[in-house]
Structures are given as C-alpha cells and as structure tokens.
Length: 295
Ligand SMILES: [Mg+2]
Image (cartoon, protein in one colour):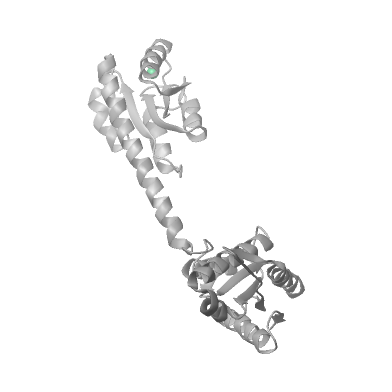
C-alpha cells in the first residue's frame, strides 16, 4: 500500500485531507510543520507528499528543494497544497520540483484525480526500478552458477584493490573436468560447476568474493589477509571439494581441484597478479593436482 504524508499546520485542513486520503485506501502519516515533514519523508517509506505551502519551520517549496537535492533512493511525488493567494506562484513551485498542485478549497473529486495521477507515476517508477535491478543483477552474475561473471569480477577486484591493503587471489580449477564432460555429458558437467561454485562460496568469508573466470576456472578474492592466512582458506576450499560427494541423478561423483595463490600488494598490477596466481595453479596441475601452490 502506498504511504502518503499530509503536512499542514492547519489542523482542520489536516483532518479533511486525512479523511479524504483514508477513503482512497492509502496509509497516511501527518506532520504539522516543515521540519517534521522533511524528517518523515526521509525516514518513512512515503511516496506521495501533500505539502502545505506555508508552514512553520520550513515551507513546502524548501522541503521540495531539499528532497530533490537529497540522495533519497525513491521518487517522492509532491503535490503542493496552496491558498488562493499563492496560485500565481505555482509556476515557481513546479520550477522547484513540485509535481502538481491543488488550490484550497478543493473538492474530494479534485483531490482524488490528482492522487490517482501520482499513484500512476509511482507505480511506473517502481516497475522501472524493479526491471532495472533485475537486469543489473543478470548483468553481473554468471547465468549457470550465480557467482559473479568475469567482467563484474574484474571490476570488483579493481575496486577492492584501490581500497584494501592487500588482496589474496586464489585461482581454482576443477581437475580433469574435460573427462567428466566427455564421460557423463555437459549437463552433468554444468551441475558439477554449480555445486562446485557453491562450495567455494560457502567456504570463503563474508568479506571475500568469488567469480567465474573461465570455463571451469573460478577466482576467489580474499582481502586484507597475509599469504599464510590466504593459503589456509585455499586449503580449506580444496579439502571441502575433495570431501564432497556430488550427487547428480543416479550418479555419485568425487572430484578434486587445484589452486594457485598469489597475494597482491599495491605494487602489482591486477592482470600481473592473476597471471602469477595462474602460474601457481599451473604448477599445482603439473605436480600432481588436488593441491594448493602459493606463488
Ligand atoms: Mg499553512
């Protein structure tokens, strides 16, 4: 249910508006001065504000300016409620970010159509916001495994590299994945990838993150730990994979992974750091697989 704020220093006007808005079936909040109105808009989930023009503390126009300047992440549809004498100033009100205005005294019918217009805009805005969030989420995650995709992973590493003292890079690769695909087919391979990435996600800390770097290659990023501690996490990932039995349909499969670790400090470029973690991974593969090698 949309929430509406009625801000008016005149008790009778407040009551009348409240009566009308309640009839329309919205949740109503009240304010009797400008400061209180602004606080309520900021703190509550108000999407439509009916603001009296003249109020103690802050005028409806000043409130509107403050809201339009603020970083509040929802659109607040503002209807200015004006006295006859302020009617000529409505251009100024619209210029300052007010969406609509209504002149006192008004009828229930007049108010109703304006509130419905506001509701249309708010609903459209919510729909766009949801669509945007959905697309955004899809654009940063790997479709199959749900972990970050390569592009988002690289951007996040770049971002963390600027903010953190050190970044542990763990390159993780499933051993003999080609054999699994060739033997059981790609659908089984896909299922393995899903569960494999879930084990990594569940093993790392909340402050770490993981992405799919390539086919069966994942990259976990561990901020602000030294090389011994990063190696401990890598070892834990290796063990958790080794001890898991992957149940896919009637199959029960055991797999292992090889891991290469490099801890990135400010002096190393990210591409170089990933290359070094990859070199360590290559070393792990070459020297027998199912192991962690630190560069
Ligand atoms: Mg007033």
